[in-house]
Image (tube, rainbow over the protein chains, first blue to last red):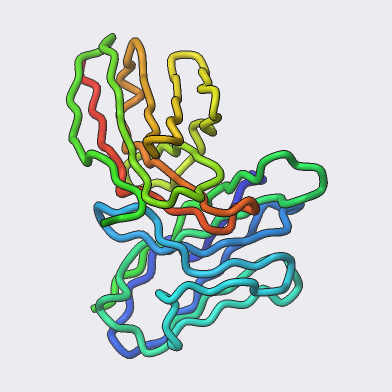
Length: 117
Length: 111
């Protein structure tokens, strides 16, 4: 399967614990996005990378959240001191920007469903 | 007011029906527009981009009205497999890093 993959698919944790999610984008894609989605809502943008550079962070991304993409390939999203309000689906998407592509299209991974007890 | 608004539905239609979804957006500077489909507990998948002149892909037709800041999706001859949530997506920037998703319209096609 050459699509976007995310691990783990499900995570249950206790409030106050730290969690880390991983996203492996489509191999030739240079952009990687993180979104959060809660029930009945569309995905909300958190942050994105172009290669290894983190170019933008949403105001939704509190200082408990940190994302990295150290080698411009896979990315990790860490949430420190989790709160019950962090319970959501965390989606990763990747895209190819530039390189003669007429319109950037984001392809989503299956998501990591987080439940904070 | 939300940046992208959709009728949440649900729309319950019989097989073979034609159904239309509407979406309005608030940012007049929005550059590109999409419809994504999301099945229950799955990731969103691109259904189609929406172009100014309108575009069609099989049974699906998308329209854009920039003056009214309005996007539509028409599904003809509905199939059971069309049951899903349809997300309207608007990007306010040329380089696609400001995608704003609507909350989605839920469609159920019944036999």
